[in-house]
Structure formats: C-alpha cells, structure tokens
Image (tube, rainbow, N blue to C red; front, side, top):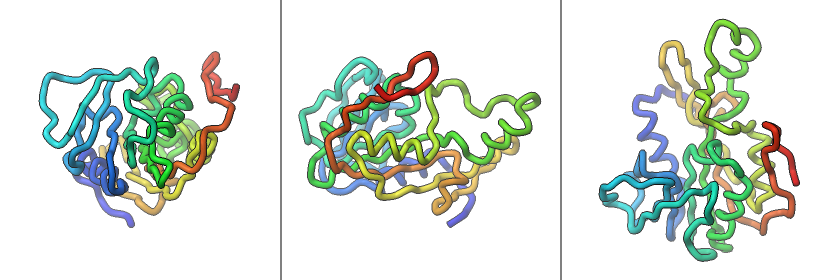
Length: 214
C-alpha cells in the first residue's frame, strides 16, 4: 500500500493504537503527542507539563535512563514506545523493563523508530555527504537497521510478529509517501513484538560510541 500522507504525526498515533490489543496500555514518552486513539491509558515521560490528559487514566514522570518503569510485574497488556528507544543510553535496559511489566499472556510491544539505512540516508552517505547536511538531526544516540532491531528485541525476550513501514520521505520538497508494506523503503519502521521469554544474559551497551554485548 502506497499513498501520500497529509498529517503524518496524527497518522502515526492511529497506527500505534491500532496495534494494541485489549487490556492496560502504557504509552512511553507520550506527553508531547498524547494519543487521542487510546482510552484509559497509562503514560510515563521524563517531564510532564501542567495540563490534563483526558484519555489517560494515570500519568507519571520517569527518567528511563536512570529509573525503572514505575509499575509492577505483568501490569500491562500493551506498551507503546514511539520514537523513544533511539534516545536512550541503554536500550536493552529499557526493553528488559518493558519485558518485566508486560503480561506473560501475549504481552505486546509497539515500537516506532527511524531506520538506519532508509533510502535517503543511504543515498546521502554514498553520494551527497559533502553538499547536503546529515539527515539525522543529531538527537539520536543510535539508529538501527531492521535486522539489528529485530535481534535486539529477540535478545530481550520478544519476537517480532509484524513489520510495518511508515513513510518514504523526500526531504528537499517535504513530501511523504506511506509505504506500509515496504518497510525497507521507510524512514521509520513500526515493530509489533510479542513477549515470549525472559531476556538473555547479554546486555547491549555503548562504549566509546560503539555498541557491544556484555
């Protein structure tokens, strides 16, 4: 399926909510873009503005680089992490926490994150590095290929049940085309993963700007 995206930020929230099943849902990093398609959700973010979030049952401040997710084991059926994992110092620690708070009965994780080798980034790195600025805004600690993110999820007790592309971006003309069935072309990818196991013993850490397993 390929079509032009008009309001890509709202569409992303609709896609995330659409992948959730019944039960409690945790929306991680939600406060800048609360999801209007969720009802009675729980939300955590590093800092909360002083306003009400009408369709959220409970919201809490939580710095995921330093703290655990402030909920008990197996409390949630769904966890949404939209554009979060690429900003975290230790993504494996975060995924282990998500694994802990997700139900053992088909607990579901929905992640959206940029792809390291989408078509525009690859083209830029090959041919235009000297004349066009880096498409990565510099806020991301790490971007993953589809293969690497799938491996990271597997090591932390998840199996990826669905990959979904979001949009193919033409940045010079600010034009976006939805590429749902072609995630390899997409700048961002949705990973719909199910909890199947406890995390493996190795942890992915960043040392001197290199990611290694320890």
